[in-house]
Amino acid sequence: MYDYDVLSIGAGSGGCASAMRSADLGKKTGLVEYRKNGTGGTCVSRGCIPTKVLLQSAKVYAEVLGAKEYGIAVTDAKPDMRVIHQKKMMAVNSLKFGLDNMLIKPRGIDRLQGKARLLDAHTVELVNGEETRTVTAENIIIATGSEPAMIPVFHIDKEKIITSDEALNLQEMPEELIIVGAGALGLEFADIFSTFGSKVTIVEMMPHVVPTLKDLEITGAVGKYMEKNGITLKCGSGIQSIQVQENGRVCCELANGEKIEADKALVAIGRSLNTKELNLEAVGVEMTPKGQIVTDDQMRTSIPGIYAVGDITEGPQLSHKAQKQGLIAAEVIAGNDAHMRYDVIPSAVFIHPEIAMVGITADEAEEQGIQVLVGKMRFSSNEKAMAMQKTTGLIKITARKEDHKIIGGHIFGEDASVLIEEVATAIQNGLTLDDVADSIHAHPTLSEIVMETCKNALGKAFHK
Picture (cartoon, one colour):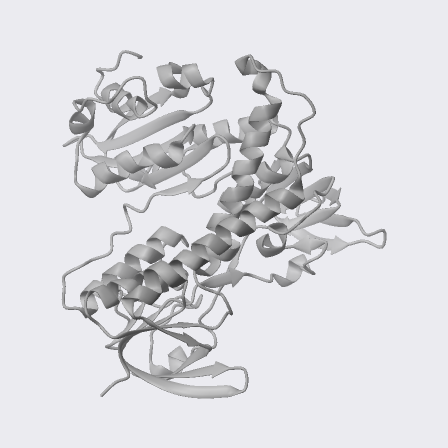
């Protein structure tokens, strides 16, 4: 007899989702977390949520500064970082309270505090300070997530050379900031710091920003827009070293010999997987050389009864991926048929305007030997975007030529994170360009651009 039917290790996005769904399915469920007040994991405390609060404050500040474009006169606007950080913590604490008291507790899920270590396929040792205990479970779901990687060559000291964890809590904006990495994290922090007055330089080893987006027209548009807004981009060169100099300034030496100085440097690349102390290999769980846990599309590992979800598995390190995997693991444990699809995981970069993507681009399709139709529209052709004076950017939708089934969508523009969901739904359900083009969209809305882009691919759009 086991203590639990399901034991989820890690109270982040994947762990909470798996625990709540397991409880709803009638399973006796335990949820392990080693951090005090750690419910919600990285997303709630040190990732998605606090960054979005800062980004929203930056967006409002930028719009106030540009209010005259809308016929509104504003004087003496300035950010109060103390209040902004208070708002950030209010959002974080509110979400944690809701998770703990409105979602987890009412379901009767047991909360267990401590660092977990597997002793065998059904036994977990929990260490909480000087207290050690063991619990057993018929099924174990590992959802331990990741942390910012402490890359030795960057000499991260968490004061002058910092990670995203420290960047979230800076009360004073540095006059000059170097950001290492032009992925989602790097671009979002660049948007925040630049808007609040820092002179930002982004260093990216790959030849363009958003390296995961394989469309040079869109990434080129993003890069030009950021440079237009005062952010310096150094793409296509690796970093030789980052050091704090005797004068307290940070010096970043690029592989091409160029040196850049700033008050601080933010390392916005690399995540360290929280799998090292779980004793997984001794238990027999198959791992990749990088420390990821190998799973099938039902989140099963190589050991029956052990499942894994979130950052520690294949695919992008995204909260919504972890949540979906957690739900699938819970359903499979309950005997239901559920499978994970990695081709329909949308992602977004919440700069202003936003970037969003799902599926594959035309270039990626060509590499796979797929003939495609591609629709493209600029936001300047959308009436709602014109009314909002938010005409920067473009959208592309890719479909198979043979049957018009949509296989990808990539957007740079206002509310891209919202617009991408229609494309993701289309891919998930095997919809065609014709299906979306023929559906009536409310006018005037930004969503019309999705419909018109599908029409464009079919040669039916008003805008050619």
